[in-house]
Amino acid sequence: MATTNVALQPSTFGKLITVLSIDGGGIRGVIPGTILSFLESELQKLDGEDARIADYFDVIAGTSTGGLVTAMLTSPNEKNRPLFAAKDVKDFYLNQCPKIFPQNSCPWFPHITKIMKALSGPKYDGKYLHSLVKEKLGSTRLHQTLTNIVIPTFDIKRLQPTVFSSYEVKRNPSSDALLSDICIATSAAPTYLPAHYFQTKDPAGKVRDFNLVDGGVAANNPALLAIGEVIKEVTKGNTDFLPMQPMDYGKFLVISLGTGSSKVENKFNAHEAAKWGILSWLTNGGSTPIVDIFTQASADMVDLHLSVVFKALQSEQSYLRIQDDKLTGDISSVDIATKKNLDDLVKVGEELLKEPVSRVNLETGLFERSGHETNEEALRRFAKILSQERQLRHAKSPNGHAANSK
Image (cartoon, rainbow, N blue to C red; front, top):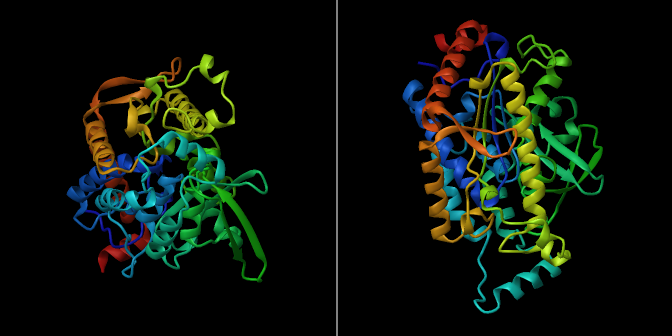
């Protein structure tokens, strides 16, 4: 049984580099939250009830709602253990989302009300979300997380991505922002929530300004960002990692969790979109087409790339993407936070566990069954690998051996 009350030892003492990635998707964060609860329960069967997701991954990456989940799983409490267990994430969403995304109180002319909001400012003021995140995460800063994290945002002043990375903060102290500010920024989806401004100071007192919106603008699926951060560290000579070539993906074990999409629904088409003006791109059929399109595009490009690379390296069994592209109606929205819709999203996550592992068809872009193994069975297999990897590192590491002998 692996010791989970000490930090995961560097991968240089093991065989793998372990990565967890969580997509953006608003209230649909309930779906990966449900899946992570199952994975953590499997790890607890192997290593005891104190086992937590953060104990097993070299890096956890999250965008938007995935960034919030990442912070919940890796922020330390007063005992220097994760602030939230994975099983708590689902309840957090069920209890808090209706307050973060209050539903339209005007039952008459809802479409007109939606258009007026789209013209006058963000759909939600974000005040409850901001106060909630600041309350939960307090004064915790990026460098204090219990494992390495990667959370993307987009700087609208500089018109470039700003990636908050545990690796980068060691070289660039000005990026050591409050985790609450990072979470508010990465979830500031254009048209839904306001952009977020904050400042940091480096040890010399130099001030750095941030003008940020949702990380989904840059990378709604941050799996490739996480891998890139590790490879960058290796090329810079970081000895915490296994010796590897810059493109040696074969040493990675990656679990990538989507938040679902309505791809199969075929919501939009060129004949309709050819007639759209600004308003139609901002609000159409209960969603925001422009946001749906750029977030889905970035998520799919990453999955396509990783699927090709892992297949070419004959390492397909080391890459698990869990995604449902068959969402329809309200459950495909990012903000319809009714009790019924949130409960339905929990069911989507539970049913997704029972479905066969699917891989993206490189021709159609759709997910297709790839074998007889279910997502539940695949996660059990990954849990065993993660547990064995942790035990190996602690057995080989002088620090891990000392901790185990106490």
